[in-house]
Length: 300
Image (cartoon, rainbow, N blue to C red; front, side):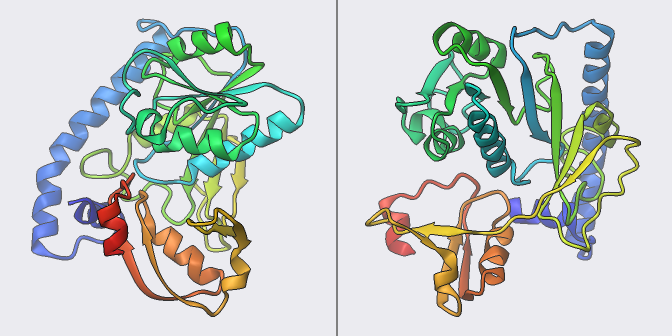
């Protein structure tokens, strides 16, 4: 089903089944877009109150479902802030973790990681692991997560992970990431398209970041004077599972390999391997946030 929906969202509808399914989904898409537009208006008019934290909040999010390279961009911004002497905390929902929907929990205090990927979710754990000194707190209620961070961790600023639609928390900067290859898909909201909100929601953005940028990328979205940033992605290293040693991916040039990926857009990973000079003889698409069980690893 996931593959069929992505085909509807990003490719011309060719088969009879795809056209019928899209026509069925279209009314629900209009209903969803109306609800999201009314919700945003309520926050703009003050009918719904956004809560305020006493430190700067930078939101890093997107307008579409699926991967736009948000995690590496969040890590890069966190590394830059930490290098400048700031104490940084990431506030994350903890998607996919057993404990992500409950009370606020500290994943990392910048020194020690307290929760497993199964408890915290794979992305919060990954950020805590890959950025030395980064503090991470998870909760569905990001304001509550921020209060816990202020009380226990004393950060200088917050990064709101996947926060563009989390209007209940005020932010000082809204960074929206879009895939330069197909920024808005077919332009429709869920479920007939990939948009979480109507395209008009981009007027709230402080900065548009076009990830996976190439010379043929698209950034002409007509969003007025909103600053735009072009972000190029490439794979640098790989880590051996047994030894944990990191090696430059350039050492694998011309190597024949089989690849597997359990992320929102596995094709961008496969393309990245080929761009690095590897020869793919097989590629296996796994579900997003796939759990690599012993059985799955044996099958691979």
